[in-house]
Image (cartoon, rainbow, N blue to C red; front, side):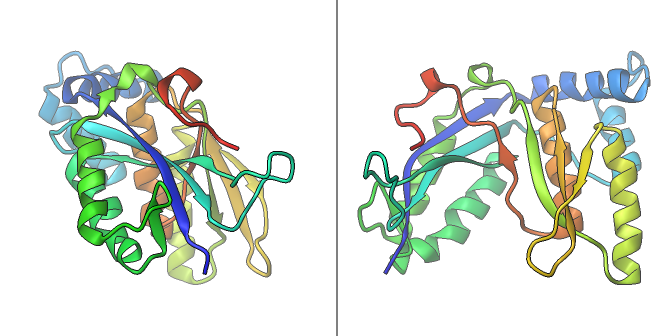
Length: 231
């Protein structure tokens, strides 16, 4: 039976004060709104009014994992293939719930192993919590150079309404859309070149509200920031 192997985890902490600065920068540079006279609360309120996204007063953490399948090998090196996956950017609590608690059942059943070793649910949650608690300074990698996601095309009337809202919001991030089907399902590859961790967070919030749970593809961490590398 094949299983997923997590070889390494990298968490990068963006302090709340920096997130607020990046929010103000977004309003100024992307939307042309001067926020000099806005309080922090007013900035967050304006963000919610425009996008219906709630930015909590907390640090944000960018989480990456080096993941590979146990039965997939590179033909040149005969080593297991593995690649860095951008998992998400969120508060420490939300990331612990999503990638610690939610994935613990897969670890308990043997479908997910830390460094290839059998991992119980408690051990997996503990490993993720430790990674988040020991998150490094975000300046190691201030933001991904590119974020992309595959989104399904709308089919029902309510989906078309949500799609129109999404496209309007993503114009603020200069998103690039390309038609791409997956099997029989029509859809799009959507990508942005974020200028900050906040813009990564906003993109993630917007696309997951439309599509639900989905993988976002982001830039791999810099070579010097990690111990292990993709194969």
